[in-house]
Image (tube, rainbow, N blue to C red; front, side, top):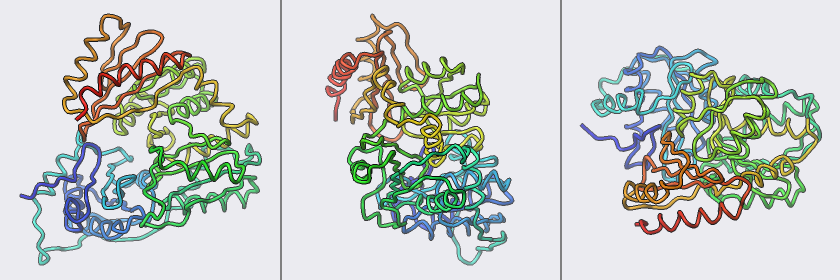
Length: 459
């Protein structure tokens, strides 16, 4: 039995030719078909050079298990989420490595109603089945049907339903697709704006789909991947900048000064927007940084609900609470009316509508949050012994702590500041976030203090 190392906690990804191949993709497709007993599954892939061949291998594996396959072509991950629920299918598989290096590829898998499949609800079982499957060309029997369609128009209809195009005022927006899968959707949106006389000017950067990623892997979460968008905003005098990762399930914002806006503050902004539309609704947030989100949600009459970090946990909690919106500081935004799934397209449309209605700029909306709730942003350290490191920090701060939480890692609150420490699921990393109440100097001092503990354990 071959051990498949490409299976991770929440998805599948690995190095091409060693950890993931077309044979392995075929096995995974067949294993998912066997595990789910599905009748019909949708497949799609991002623009990586191997995604088409991996997608067809998965499709053939599904068909060999007797599953009908609907192929929606080159799409972002959220288009698979949309198609699975819109067509009322038994599951969906997106071939993507998102922001991983160019020599990687992988898969994100959902079940019926676009519910995520992770190691906690089926991914381990799919792995075991896939490992037990032997490939024999003589017994492959494509029993399931194959049909290729496009749902781009239907998907664009749905994401545009989150805003009222009549609200939009003249805005100039830089959109950096990173040569990833976002470009075709941006083209469709631009066409809709033109047809409806919506006064948005889109300035396209790194727009053409190119799986060689000539300008580098699109991952604006990394500071070194932001400069192109920032420079373009300033050069064109744009009101707003947007940058996407490879499968555009995350979008990142820049104000008119080219300043990168941390995803944490966008969560509060979107929460406030939804609570204006549905007062009293529940908002899900992760535990890494919380002060700003909780303050905004409570002032707007909503109920903040903390969830463990990670898309599977956020989506499950949203369903449980019937929450209208959920947000993570990592720029994942989830919407009840998008099948409780995350979308990278809906957030920027909402922000454009917000700027139009309030007749203001992003910096004017965000600056008060940043000064009221200064935050370190996520800092990573490669640690040899994470458990010992976290224990030492816990013991050091325990005498003065006001509250401790273990929703996800270690969170300690001291009234005027707090921190969250989390161990990575996949690497020997500790992730640190620090925030304070209106005191930037305190936040910086406590961040430095905690980093001294972490640096003593660095590998």
